[in-house]
Image (cartoon, rainbow, N blue to C red; front, side):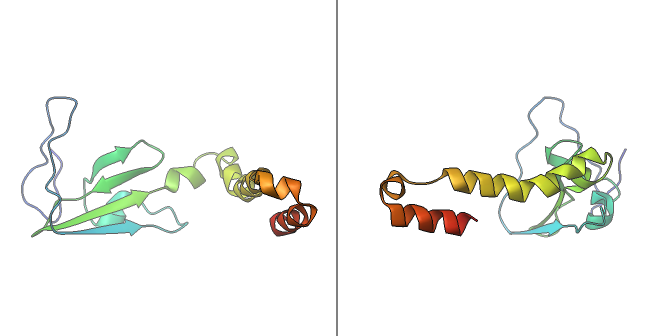
Length: 124
């Protein structure tokens, strides 16, 4: 049975597909790690954080609530670790956004030569 650092109660695993409702009152602290690839266990200082949303690559993890304070962590380490080809998205993302911005020209900018030149200059 997983043991949590901040709470002495055992982790309850739901028997069905739908997890039990979580009280959303109080303060929620969201922690993000840098490019070092810190694990959710180290980020939350918890032996067994629960995966709230996401999958094995990225996801939100939650630790036990302490006095109305919810502590969650977003772990995106799977995007930059594991495969070298997976890091390619980091290089291609700026080029993709510029390409999309170039195609977002309004019809009024197409009609006016000056507006179209300004649009092209801003995108470049």
